[in-house]
Amino acid sequence: MALMITAECINCDVCEPECPNQAISMGEDFYQIDPNRCTECVGHFDEPQCVQVCPVECIPVDPAHTENHETLWQKYQRLQAAGQSLASPGPVVLPPSTP
Image 1 (spheres, helix red, strand yellow):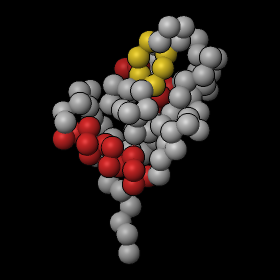
Image 2 (cartoon, rainbow, N blue to C red; image 1 turned 45 degrees about the vertical axis):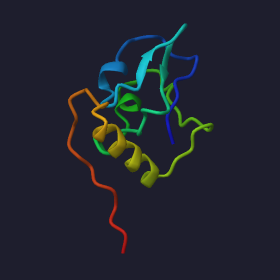
Image 3 (tube, helix red, strand yellow; image 1 turned 60 degrees about the vertical axis):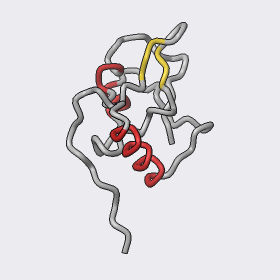
Image 4 (cartoon, helix red, strand yellow; image 1 turned 90 degrees about the horizontal axis):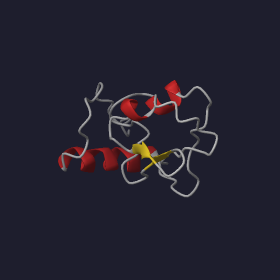
């Protein structure tokens, strides 16, 4: 699932630098998240960093872009292989092992 930023965004600028995939950018009126780049921080952190720092809690899951953990992991791997994750990555978080 990609995340999205709602109209409640106050443009405080704290989420954009926290995104390891550079999926957050300024939109016409408030920040937006590119669902093609958002992995909910899978591969980087245990929790989405933008959600952690948002003071107004305006970053829910985007119902138009539902993805499971494995799909997010695959997206993370594609972004890494393409060199598109340009921000300093956090610790690598591996997907859960399958029995």
